Length: 499
Image (tube, rainbow, N blue to C red):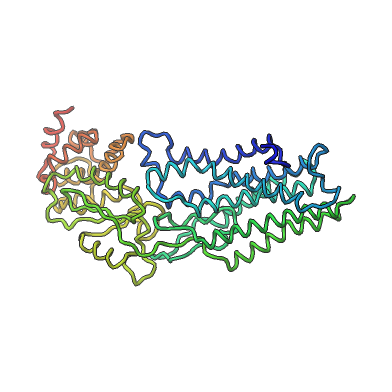
């Protein structure tokens, strides 16, 4: 191993390798529920995983640059097998070899740290390995090591750790400032978009929606690795200039620093002005749709989004259990479209679907609502929470016209005094109760949240009922609630038996 790593120190390399691996590994375990008994709600979609891999390297970048500076400083010690820069002699191999080996270690450490996230997510989504996103993340630690190594060779002391810490930290912070989440305006998403600056900066632009079918532009991956090659070459050249021009005083430092900083900056500037967009959008697709038995409710997703489809089918089966058999006959129904994948790429399109996909969607009938599963957009903003979805379901399936006025005044009602006020009080709670029941069925906590300002025996019984009791009560009385025939006395006689 020592021979393979030479001239890098085996002990230092191991310590820094584990340090570089720790941050993405910790995020992998924390974010993706590794070890959970039911990890599927925690596992991201394949598309969402791509986005995370493009920024999980930020701390690794700083450590990689410090590793480079440390390695160069160690190489300047009398015991090093690599002659210090001021001795002179052939230097391409002397500096190119450690730069390449350290860059490879930085990339491998980041990739190893990402493995828990990749394995856990793909295990529950069935997606493909996000090679493009992984390569994007692996590129930056490689460049940072080379940058740190050159700084260490130029300074020739342990003080090089200071700029090797501050410079990558500044670049990462600059990425966050310059590439703040940005959503395309309006209700369309272009086929390819994103700032070319994101190819240059450590962090990719993550504010564009991690919908299925989204992939990193292969041209952007290629350009990013070309920039890494430029940084590696500039770092090696800076070390060579240091060895060739070193002399007492500081005048010699201008040339290596100019090569080290200006060459990568110039190359990055060219890419930022005219480089490729970093993301490519899915082509029109035919969705995968499933329906809920007994209720005119369907869920559709992109073919690559099996995780969200399975998750929402579990949600909707729980929601459908609130409605007795044949209680919603005559309703046109709802079709839930999951994620930004359905958003069209031009104003002339209804959805980003093939002709067959549009025909299948039309065949399902019902009202189409697009659900937010990643980033809020104009189309999905109205349904950014499961409670928004359950509220739409309640409005679609329960037609209590007799309680319309009472619903407008539900927060002003001090007591429940007639059937309309009871129906309004129950219907206002129903969407949130449905949401809580869904999460309880998936192992989440119970959070009873009675709504409305009314007080009194009937209101207190409704508010104090558990979600299970409330669920059973609605199933028993749904027809009467729709007709406003359930009085406060009926509530007391029904729920009072359990208290």
